[in-house]
Image (tube, rainbow, N blue to C red; front, side, top):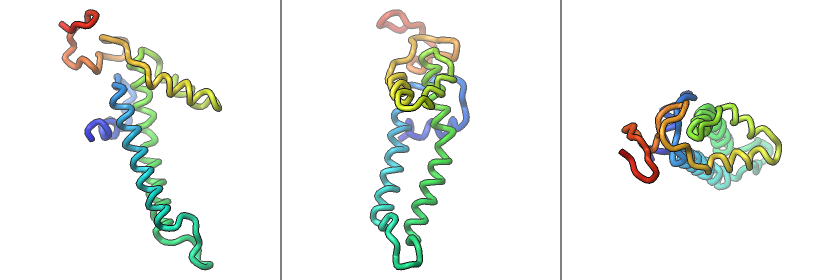
Length: 141
């Protein structure tokens, strides 16, 4: 649970590096919230109208929650992705790859799956080695 909330604690921190685990656990947490809200929407009837009075109160509440969650995780989602690129010693501007239709999202997905650089890089120390030990092959000193 800690890994799911860590990007929210580092809300607008675009500096440093983030592990794959931090990125993917945050993504999983957001997905689970969306699935829960979608289930509530399905239980509440979704877009089904109750007579001519419009959508039900539960439907409007769930749509409001969707909007709040989407707005609340927008900045942390970008920030954690920037820190993932930093972990691979790439510029945070690579986030803009996601704006390329069709292929951009696939490229970003591949980059999010790649491991980060071992040891410190220009964006900070290795998040897999928080003690700052030097990395030599398969051995930390």
